[in-house]
Structure formats: structure tokens, C-alpha cells
Amino acid sequence: MKIGIPKEISAGETRVALVPSAITALTRNKHTVLVEAGAGVASSFSDSEYQSAGATIVGNAVELYRASEIIFKLNPPQMHPQTGKHEVLLMNEGATYIGFLAPFSNLDALRQLAERRITSFAMEFVPRLTRAQSMDALSSMATVAGYKAVLMAAHHLGKFFPLLMTAAGTIPPATVLVLGAGVAGLQAIATAKRLGAKVEAFDPRPAVKEQVKSLGANFIDMEVTEQVETAGGYAKEQSEEFLRKEREVIAARLPKADAVICTAQVFGKRAPVLLTKEMVHSLRPGSVIVDLAAESGGNCELTVPRLTAEINGVSIIGAVNLASALPVHASQMYAKNITNLFLNIFPKDSTTPNFDDEITQGSCITRDGEIVNAAVRNALQAEGARK
Ligand code: NAD
Image 1 (spheres, rainbow, N blue to C red):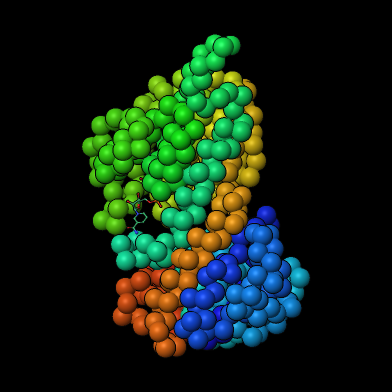
Image 2: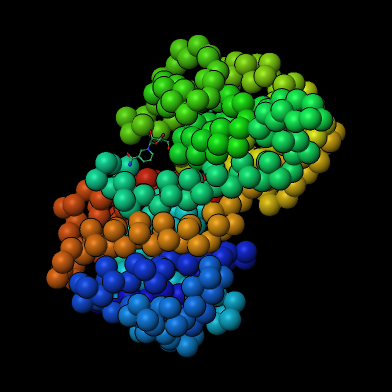
């Protein structure tokens, strides 16, 4: 099959969906890889590297989409500024799309995908099974973001992270508070520990305590009386009473914290508010909050996505798409994930997806002119009812 890799067009995006080193896994299975000229430049992969790896370079987006049966993308389809056409309309009718789709905030594009009988697979919906770990782009991007968030905090803080014993005196380690210890939070903890900080963390899911402790961080204990975990291992939306208690526990740690890394999210919902305006005032001037939940509403009430606000000397960083700040490795990880997903959807020599497979079925959003994912269909119905 002909797989097309367009240049990503989202503002500030530096990643690319496929890197040269991932091409052999596709050409070995007799697929052809077409790459839009300059697609990898922002992540330091030149056209000639793609060519040497076996890809064909195509001059522009229109030609690339026209020549491709399958599109590998990172960001959900959107209006293409150079062509003046939506990316869904650039794709061939009946083509296949694999990439992030942000289904709940992109319902119009999903309708268009269905209308054009495009079979689409969303990276967000790859089921979190052990077998699907190598296809889990959410985890890959969260790993990058957790790492980068700590480096940003260290960069903004006017203090060292590690304990230093110098002739000019002893400098105590910085204290880092990590809220939410999923993939991004655990990576943030590990990175802050490597930099020598004293780290504390909280997450309501019971399994997390041991993971936090195994990284050498202190787990903040709080009595959890409600069921906070779904059968799939995700956090559920918590009650207001739970969040009120949690804010009390967090508030007690803030006067000593130098950096707070916020990573608490509930899939498909607004992120829980864990730091109110009043709580920010109890941080010392010079402290830093990096809010990775900025795009889903923010864990801090004062977060502004994409901006760094300064309130009473406290920097609040509304971090968005941090994975783009490390494009080489973020693209490399994503390329592995999307290639593995593709090879699972289309196993050797097959040109039609096997929908009996749990991963193929779970990640499919549109097929045969319909939106087939139940959660997305419900969201569409709810939107219709609201209108
Ligand atoms: P996420 O990005 O949806 O959420 C981040 C974290 O925020 C989660 O740990 C969640 O518990 C936490 N959180 C939610 N409400 C909170 C609150 N009020 N206070 C503090 N923290 C709060 O989740 P994620 O990082 O993508 O993944 C979460 C979990 O999913 C993993 O830890 C793991 O158990 C599971 N997972 C499984 C696989 C797999 O098996 N393939 C892969 C990745 C993740």
C-alpha cells in the first residue's frame, strides 16, 4: 500500500509522524512510503535521509494526499493553510487515516471523515493492553512531556535542584511536588530525582503509591474512600468532596514547594482543579508551577494555556504540546508506535483491516461511512441534543 507522510501544519508543531529509521519496517512488507518535501525538517530529518531509507519525496501536500492510500499523521486533520482545504478533503475518498484525532473536540472533522468513507484510527483510542504497549503514543508523548516539564521548572527556578556542599556554603535540594503520577507524572518524578530534588507526589489511584516510592519519592498519603479507578486502570472523575480534601492536603505542602508539576487528568473530562488562586498565594515568590493539564482546563485555576503568567512572583506555565520541544525523540517514539499500530491493523500481506482484533476495533473511529466508536457517537448525540 502507499503510505503518505504529510508535513504537520499545526502552529508550533515540530514533530513528524514517521522518521527515516522506521521506514524499513514498512518497505520490508512491500509498502511504499511517500514523504512530503520538508516534512521532517523541523525535527532534524532531511529529505535525503528519508530517500536513503527508501522513501519517495513528493513536492507538496496536494500531490502527497492524492498519491496516498494511507495517511500517517500526528495532529488531527485541520484546515491546510497553503491549499485552503481541510486535510480531510485533501485525503482520497475511501483512504485510511492513522493518527491523533482528538475525537471529542473534533466532531465536525469526524463527520467529514465518515462522509468521505475514510477509515480512521485514533492513537488516543489504542486500548491500553499489554500487547498494545508498543503502539501507545499517549504514553510516549506523556513521557516526553513529563521529562520536559521538570527541565522547564528547573530553568525557571532561581535555585539549584540538587543538594550542593560548596566552600560558599551548603545549598539544600529543591522540593518538587508532582500532582498526578500516571505516565507523565512518573517521568517527572524520575527526572526531578535525577536532578537531585526532593520529590513528593500524589495520585488517587491506589496502585501508584508503590510506583512513586520505587522512584525514591515520598508518596503523600490521603484517605481515599471513593472508587477512583475505572476497570481499565484510569482515574475516574472524583467528587467535589474528594477534591476539596485533596486540595487541603496539597495546601499543607505548598509553603515548602519550589516547583509543582501538575499532570492530573481524567480521560475525556476537564482536568481536576487542584490549585486554587488562594493556594497559589501560599507558594513562595520564585516558585514555579508547570501545568501539563493546561489544554484540558488546567490543574491550577490561574493557568493560561501556552502562556507563562506571573502571580505574586510565582511563575505558572500553561504547558501545551511539550512533546514538540523534543522533536527528534518524540517523533522517533511516535513513528515506532504508529508503525506498530499499522502493522497490527494490516498484518503481513493483508490490505483490509481485521476488525476481530481488539486493538484494531478499539482504535477505529470511522468505517464504511459511519462513526463506529460508541463513546464518540454518544458525544455526537449529546452535541445534537444541546443544539
Ligand atoms: P492520564 O494522563 O489520564 O492521567 C494522569 C494521572 O492523573 C493519572 O495517574 C490519574 O490517576 C491522575 N489523576 C486523576 N485525577 C487526579 C487527582 N484528582 N489528583 C491527582 N492525580 C489525579 O493517565 P495516563 O498517565 O495516561 O495513564 C494512567 C494509567 O493508565 C497508568 O498509570 C496505567 O495504570 C495505565 N496505563 C496502562 C498502559 C498499558 O497497559 N498499556 C499504558 C499506559 C498507561
